[in-house]
Image 1: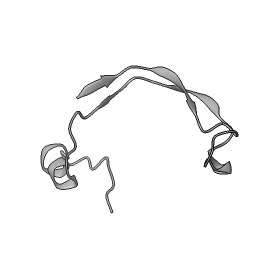
Image 2 (image 1 turned 30 degrees about the vertical axis):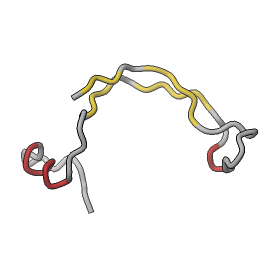
Image 3 (image 1 turned 90 degrees about the vertical axis):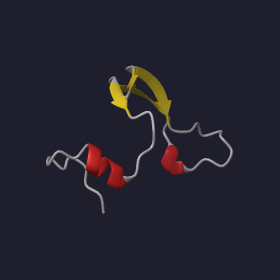
Image 4 (image 1 turned 135 degrees about the vertical axis):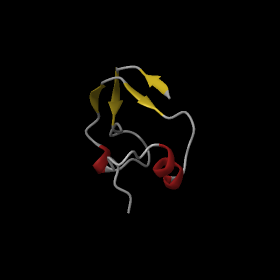
Length: 61
């Protein structure tokens, strides 16, 4: 796992960005708390075998 630090970023697109859509506005600042993320991609089956300890926290279709 890799630790992702907390921080702020701008979400959305400015109205002047070519090709942007109205649904991407207004651009606004977002604060995200620190979290951990897997370093490598895994399949849903690999996750079920290695991480799902009966809690079924993630719902896959």
